[in-house]
Length: 84
Image (cartoon, rainbow, N blue to C red):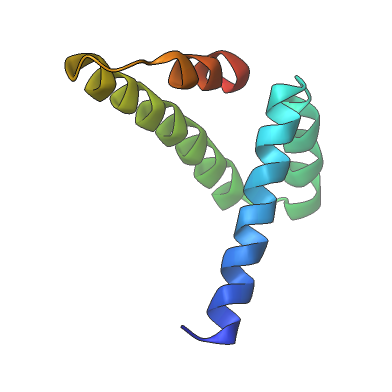
C-alpha cells in the first residue's frame, strides 16, 4: 500500500469521525449546511445522502444478522439510536 493511499484512508477516517461526532450531538444539519455552502456541488448532496442511507442500511443488516444468529444486538442498537 502506498503512502498516498494511507494518507487518503486516514483523511477519510477523520472525515467520517467528524460526521458521526456531529450526528451524535445533533449538529449534523449544521455541518451539512456548512459543507454544502462551501462546496456548492450537487454531487456532494447526492454522495452525502447515499452515505447516510447506506450507513443506516448496514447497521440494520448487521442487527438482523445478529438476531438470526441469536447474538446480542445491544451495540448495534446503541449505534442506531445514537446516529439514526
